[in-house]
Length: 136
Picture (spheres, rainbow, N blue to C red):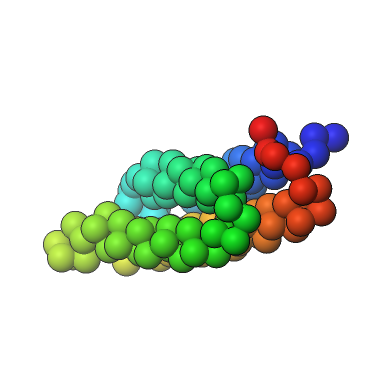
């Protein structure tokens, strides 16, 4: 079993793939066709790279200064909220039949990724306290 920070990254990646698989299954089997037509892949194209960049930034800053993780997380959340407003602005200002399904899907994925990110950061902090060694 992979331990440490690399194991946390692997678990986060597996969570993203699991979330994508469940979302795809729901789109195919349960949700109305309009949810699929709303281009939900754009959500993952926006959120997943942003999450990974944020986690990399928090990990990098955590290596340098152990007390900066929460400040960096709050800065990341502010950036993600502003990015979400900018990303969703075409659907908010130019409303059509896809606006509501897209925004529902966006915030569901956003919330689930936020929960995973917070779990990742808490485990990172716990791992840093237990091991007291540099992360590689």
